[in-house]
Image (tube, rainbow, N blue to C red; front, side):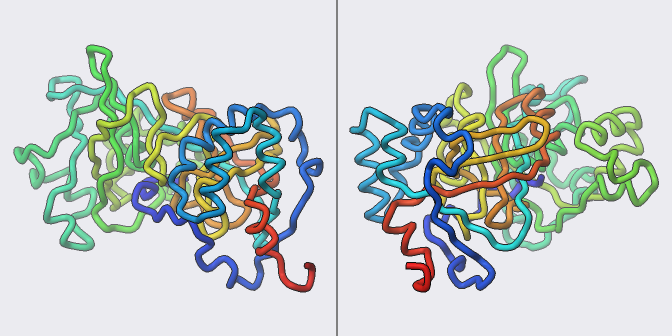
Length: 345
């Protein structure tokens, strides 16, 4: 899952282009058709919904946001004002996971913290593509310009921070610097996992983020060369207005919530909408989540990325997730029925 471009993707609150896709179908369901609906913690979902509800512009959504502050029963709120809509585009359902990395770092370099986290230089904004990852890392083009946000102790963790697009840097005194996506050098992302398979290092079914990290650490010289196979390079910005106790900012520019926020394709799912998730696999999940993020790899009506939280444990759990299932969008009643073709009304 590449989330590096999550921060600059549009936070569209409309169904841009979705209605024009002939293969897209819409089916209104009853709430009792949602597997596990009655057992979920609807209060927890409503709290997350309120977090971004105020960002809606459409009158029907804004009316629901006002109601969300005044109704005592969260489950009744969703059942009274929404209808579940199954949106399908012919592609198989897929759930994956993402997380916020946490790196060890310092504000100044030393023998341990040697790998800089850079802000975007002005010239990179005006030239596409700009220098490649190899050129950035093996020349002094960025050195001595005050572009360093911090220095970290692990180049492979820095590489995966760039893939995720945001994260936290834990400083020696226990404080944190939160960083978010600040731009990139304009080069196409190239998968180092696929390159490992091409070189015969691993088979496709063996490759994962942890496998890549461990191989690079065991082979530091060859490992850095492998990472430079990916010409794309991501720059960062500091995110000062979000408390370290809260989740990172999603596409709606609000903090996302562990195991209640998902990234979706906004061509099909309005950002901010509640989404009922029925994830299958070894650890089935039935939960009401809120669509508060996007991702460059999240494409399709039945495609979602579940936010697992911050740190290594969250990263390992997110990296293992690749399951099928079903997702059902909760839409305001009139909007839901407006999605149906005239032949079924």
